[in-house]
Image (tube, rainbow, N blue to C red; front, side, top):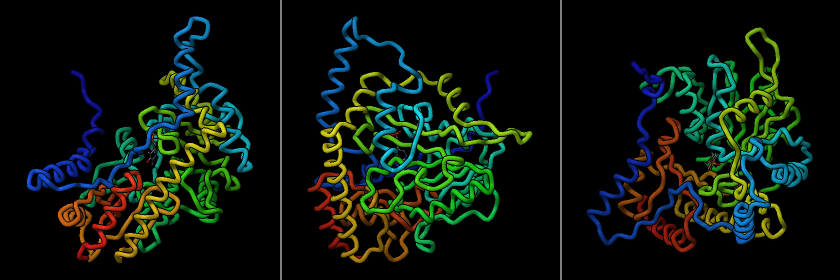
Length: 410
Ligand SMILES: *Cc1c(COP(=O)(O)O)cnc(C)c1O
């Protein structure tokens, strides 16, 4: 008899987006003429940059000619891309990386979900709350979470609440944890940490032999000077941190798929006898066993974003989204909302007015302004009473949504 991995039964159904769709459909049935504006999307909407497309076309032609055809590539990624990543994304920050410390992949979702495999099932994990659900669910599947309590928290996971009370910045845990997932700029809150704040986490990790899993998928959206783009800008981070990056939001690759993970050879974790091991070796072993690399045309396309024209083109798109973010942030503030994020990230996190629950505010916004966002409670128990809007909509929809929200009775 084939038995299932019962850890999967500990996961509640993916209720958030289906419930949002259900409520929208109900509203549409009752109001067939309503023009609904969706500011809930966590996906980019602008097409790939011309430079990216040209390069991908050329690479596809190469694949169609015997002399230039390529089969399996290196599992870790082509050197032409890895060297551009190191030169452009890390060298200017004063961070030196070696070629075999960068692992090109088909997504930061896969990498942040898979990375837990190289750690003991006994590891205590800590996540911010609210959180990108992948970090939690991948550990539930593996069997690290314990059961889901009636408070919406898994018993063995350490939650780091991020609420108005701490200005949405996680506090160092009181108990000892082994793996800490941090995502800054943050999805869903749009908040960032300063170098000094991030250093506290690096110091904690060094003092406790813990590992930080740092998701920097949104670093390209940082507008303000002084905000760390990479955790390796922090002294000592190369001993304790793995960093995840993605071309998804940076360059519109959500449907094209390319990302990378940095595992410095100096990052160590320990076996049950206390002997140190390089996580770089373990991740290499994991990837070479279970992953066969990103397609050649996609890696060529990703490399093209580092050309001067590529940089100009992706910058223009990011600027477009960040102007939307500013319109939303300022529009909400003028309407009297308490607002977070939207300065260095494409996400705006608002406190629901009048202590409405996330879902009650969802309904109010849908019914009274025909605007759709994402209830904060969907990102974790501490997201209750908050709401996420995103900057990935069109300019006209973003402006129209703010006009409607301005007239909302709150
Ligand atoms: C969008 C996003 C990613 C990127 O995922 P990909 O698999 O690379 O598309 C990673 N982390 C967070 C928090 C995200 O929101």
